[in-house]
Length: 190
Image (cartoon, rainbow, N blue to C red; front, side):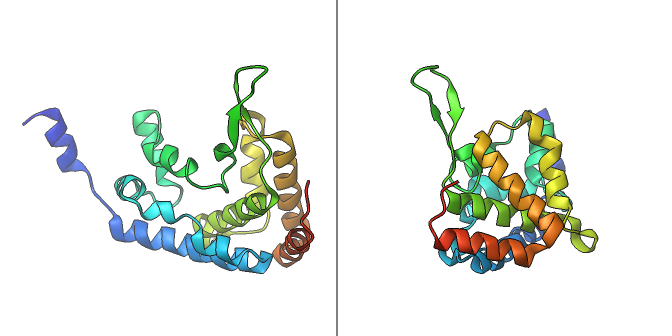
């Protein structure tokens, strides 16, 4: 028996557990987006996670306490599921990059506000799902700050997301949702 066959045989897939966790996450984002006035965005959130490219890898690398993309990245040095996901979902800052004509370098661009709002809802939901009963409003900000120095994101987008996460930490989610909804209703441009 070759190495590939043995490796494939040892893989334990967790499709039901993975389905349940991504669906719980999606439902949480839908609720959060509705509170911000982004009902359609909430309903469309993360549908690519059910595609074969993302779902099969998520089932294969399922961890339950953090994204399976991290386990895929640890094993392979990259995550095909993440590459697929971030290229199809506008609420990820990695989606928003383009070539700068002057520098000829791929550069982050400023996200439209409605996607910053969805990104906030996504991060809040992910913290709630992965932290479970240990969740508190400081977790999303702590996670954001851990990677801030190495994140390749437009500075204005980073500052806006950090503002929302700090507000969550200090005032709670209901205040942040009202704040975001007001900005969306008034076509706020940051």
